Each structure stands twice: as C-alpha cells, then as structure tokens.
Length: 365
Image (spheres, rainbow, N blue to C red):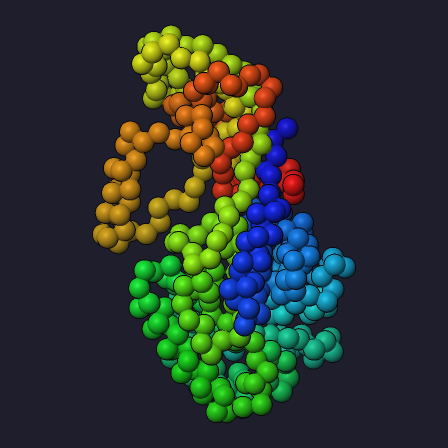
C-alpha cells in the first residue's frame, strides 16, 4: 500500500522555528488544499498541539469541517474567500467561522443573514492592494471607510488584511508598494475609529512575506507552505522539507544494452543494467505539476531557459537515489537498480504532497 509519510519531528521543528521568528505576531496557519495535501483535520490537530490556535482556509467546506470538529470549538477559523450563498453564510455563522468581506454586497449579505438568524458574525475586511483577486480596491477609500463605519454597527469587524502578489521577490519593491497602499488605508481607518482600530487583527504577509520583509503595523501573519519547508526562496530560519511517499517495488528486471524503457522509447540502455518497477505513477499525483500559465514574453523566456537547463538532467526517485528511466507511467515508474532493490521492498519517493491523490493514506510518523 502506498502511503504519504509526514515526518512529525521535522514538522514540529518547522513550526517551532517559525513561531520563534514570528513571536510578535499571531500566526494564522493556512491549511487550504486539504492542509497542503497533509489531510486537513489531522494536520490542523497537529498544529493545534504545537500551540497554533488560529487557522485560515480558502473554501467554505474546509471552514465548516474544522469548526464541526470539537477540537476546534475554541479555535479561530478564518475563511479567506468571500461567500455569496446565503444558506452557506448561515451555516458558517452557526459554526462561528470568521468571514472575509471584499465588497459592500458581501457585507450587506452577511448583515442580512445575521439579522434573520440573530447570529453575531465576525468578519475581516479584505483590501486589494495589487493582487487583483478579492477585496475592496485600495483606491476605493470611501467604500472601505463606509464598511467600517456603517456596518461596524451591525457586524463585528475584527480584522483587516491584504495579500501580497510577489512576496518571494528578491528585492522589496512590489511588496513595499503594496505595504504603502495598505498603510494609507490603515491610517484612515485608525483616524476614523481609533477604538475599533486598536482591536483589529491586521495581516498582510503570507509565508514568504512573513520571513523576508518587515511586518510593521501588522499583528498577524499567515503561514502555509513554510510549515512544510517548501518555499520558492531561501528562508532566514531553518526549515525542513517534509513528507515523502512510501511505495513498494513491484518487480525487478534485467535489461541488455540497446533495450528500450517505458512509453515512447525515451530511454535506451547504453549498457546491460538492472531495473526496478516502483508502484507509483501520475494517477497518484507523482510527477504532476502546475501548468505554465503566464504568457508575458519574459515568462515564456524563463520557461524556455528552465526547460533547456533540464536537457540531459537525470531525475531521481528520492534525494539522489535511484535514477528514473524513461517516462513515468500512469501507475508505475522504472528506476535503475543498483542491486539494493528487491521485489516487495519499500522505497521512499520525493513528492509534493499538494499533488498527491487524496485516496493515498496519510500517516503521521
């Protein structure tokens, strides 16, 4: 049986190191995408045991799943995405989920459901400072201030936040611009209602932002991929790369010089070699990745350079061990066997947990 193994000692060390680094801020653990592939509830429970009491998700059903579990009855769960369905808003309020408001219509809907149900909602106001997704535009100061002034009397506004678009950038430029735009809004909200402002949870930084850039005028951060040690930049704290697949060897084989391997004959043996067939393939999420989805000339060139650099580069099953030969198939991969692999053996396989099929068992070890 295939398993995704979560190394609890390494995960606990990541959490502790980030808690120490962000000691002056409330940490919202972002557990979207089924806990980044680690399985939502077991992962959130592990975080809870490490002292994390604030969580953030992207889908309403994730928020409801957390707050339906008695372990999270006292935890703060923030839904980062606005919800427009009145019935689901009602259920979210009943569960005690903190909602995101990114437009006047969102706020009016929540206020309406709140009045009908006599439930007191907690909301965070989202300000779009340059991401172009959810939120009041930073340019629309009037609407933002109106939200705080008018609806602050009918709903409980407990936070305000924005989201960085390029927090992994090597220079503090785009992120600085977003910070400056957000600061303008914060100053105006503070001037309008200093008492309310003093109680707000204010956050803008995701994992990269929290670790790379000054978190001035904020009292919370959102940490997701950093807990897994999977960031697109070098972190200023020690982070372990966690999680691997544990898979069995289905068979071993011997090939002669000139024999082909896998679909498309993309690999031809240059000498007599031993091989092993590993029971993992792209149907399980192995060797799958996001498509290139940005088409500016500079992006296309960057993709081309990356592809060119990969020509002739060997791919390995786990940390430089067992060279993958030919194409990975739907349900298996073929590797060079140095004589240490036998049918039935368990082997470790590198993977991104986010892409691993949810049917594969997760084991915290």
